[in-house]
Image (tube, rainbow, N blue to C red; front, side, top):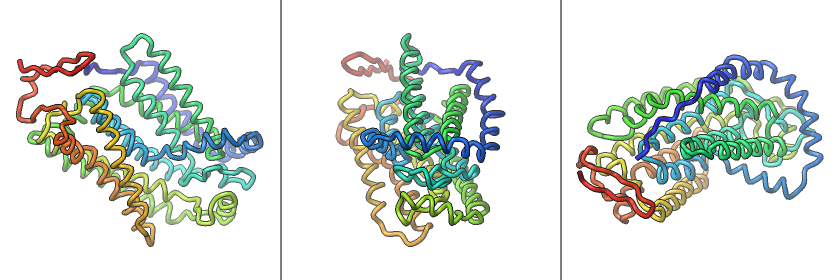
Length: 394
């Protein structure tokens, strides 16, 4: 099994530091003049919208946190190398937390909040900087490309395609009137910094992630550690919500601009970003479920033939989406009950579903690798072939 470390070069590290220290703070400082200068460009772009392209780009509204936990993470869990799965899941989840808490701190308007002359085609909720959709796309596509193709000669071509797709997605949100240009750039810069960070400290992060998710008897204390970290981060966003958002009410003019093209119930505020920080509940559930599963199954349970992986992924995706859709129909009466039933509870259930419940069900269905957890890892030799996976005892 290939557990080769992936390291980011000095050039990328230097660029990441430059972006963190100078470029991003400069954009945040100049946000008002940047919004003013780019408004005319977005209005001009709006005048050139065509129906088929608008309809195509509008499908990107489904690129949200539910997509991450219902499709991307099940894809990673069922298809990636076991030693790399926990790090990737933790990286993406914590990145989404950072995206949302930064949005609460920056509090930047979307274009259709800023002026009535710009129409938001899909009326996304939450602050515009950083863009959740742009960050999620760039983080997922870039991370998966590096993880899968870093050792191949043609990786530069693959990376070029990924960069092109990221730029196209970024342009889509400008075209739809959902983000200003500097907001899209800031989102891409933050993604670059996070990706550079995770591969710079690859060895330490892999060790931490694998300790957090494997070998229950030895590492079960990590359940408590992650619960403490998770609840502290939840407390942090709740503090921001109380100290910042409670005293920053949308301007009546801003509401008028937003609802001109959106529904009458649309509210231009950061409540969506606060709910997005509930992703830490998913991470806590994932860590707990993974450690409990390691007491039943070996860490290599997901290494099977492709058709078994695909069936597991499809069932996992369907089950997770059903949870988010089902809880979305539960009537809520205030922001607290809405957060609990549309974010916290489905995230906890989907975390346990992906990391514990479904793998146990898949074992009963004979869709997992038949290795029991009581056999030491050193006693197994795992060999890959093009047709099948062969497991021999030494």
